[in-house]
Length: 112
Length: 114
Image (cartoon, rainbow over all chains, first blue to last red; front, side):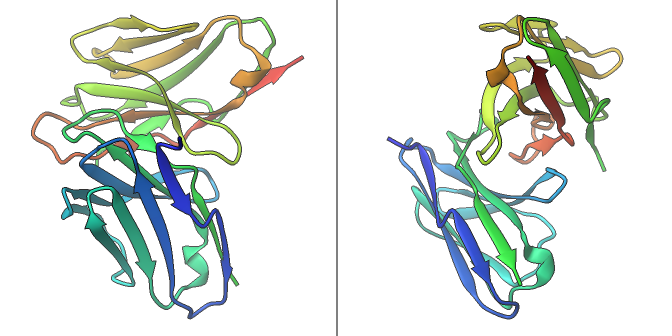
């Protein structure tokens, strides 16, 4: 009955590789988000999609590309991974507007 | 840019005592604030929220206080329990008409001592 789920939970990869992280929500929300949490626990928004349309795109390298096949899914593809991409990535969703966001369990990415 | 910050990065309290976690924000136009709890290895979990037309809101064992004059909010946890040990974040959701994004504070690590 997981509301917001992410796969994989852990991802260890070599520098230069391309990887994807998947997110799904079964809450019927129409807005989904990706956040990056660094080693100091600081959370920063990366992207936001509403009904499959990009509405927020913070200053993120264009190696990061979100894809929303439908409003229940928001995947994050990362090209040419760099050491500095190592972090925990969280997906979140809400019913739009400025309502409470619900977070997934996170994907721990380690780039070697 | 606007920011949301916390006064203390760590807080240790005895089990059974009350905890108070503070947060300062700088966007005076913000009208919605949220507290999240993040346990180790998990995602942030909603605790309680408050809108700017309120000064205080209570939940189960938690109370959020908002002081718009000094742009400060606090989270009070009554009778702190070991399960309350976590990182607590305040977040503001921008002013009316702003983009739908949360700006998080840097977090406070709460440790409950036996």
